[in-house]
Length: 342
Image (tube, rainbow, N blue to C red; front, side):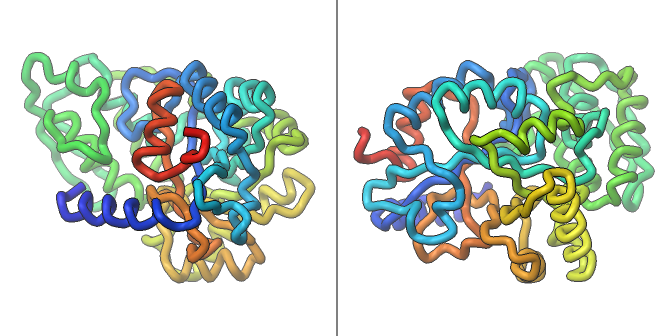
């Protein structure tokens, strides 16, 4: 993130802190992970403490409150909880905590991920590159336009990968630079090619493919359990978790529409919520969402939401690994949320 972007973001946060506002939280995995470049993992203990903060403040509301003005208040004391992708730990680790505190949540599920028995490509990429084992010095990567990479590591580089954030830090080690470059190549490949690319990288790295149990999506039976739960609302997340802004309008419609229909068919009920993969959206994607009759669509723009926001492009705040006290300060000091409870 550039200094100009950081300053602009701070200005936008400051402006919104004085409007009628609310918060939409974004989670992915509820599991512990030592190497987590996108900070998408929150441990069960931290998640419990964060939900306790919302429960104590009586702040938790359903995402539907943000389709209109009901979710925004002068004190910013209404917060909705969402999850992207449909990881199995949303059922096994998150749901018991949500039940404990009686907190509603929306889970945005990728259509073709239901029943998937392997890691998502972004998880496999960091497994292959950011571990502590040695890597070959040369990578002849045949995907995309094809490139040859040279990896010249120094002693101690692997320790720097623990805690490294790919979204707000520079690339200080060869592995970090390689991770970012490969991520940018793989994200725009066809879905089948993405898996082929990460299989290739696993073999190059000398890793035996072994998907961690917590890093897979729900299967059909598990999907049915969350679909029937009174605290859970389902949303769609495209058919294949594609980068929508890299597709033609026609392919955007196909990915959004087919994924949406699949989640409706699997759940047996209408679905009126959507989340843009990687937070990427444009006018074509919003048009496709509107044409499907979707009421609410979420981005990953890190801001509280105000009344003027387009309900089909709502910002969300990514919750990361932090205890309850720090979580409350983060919401209050950075975004002006839960002000009354503080």
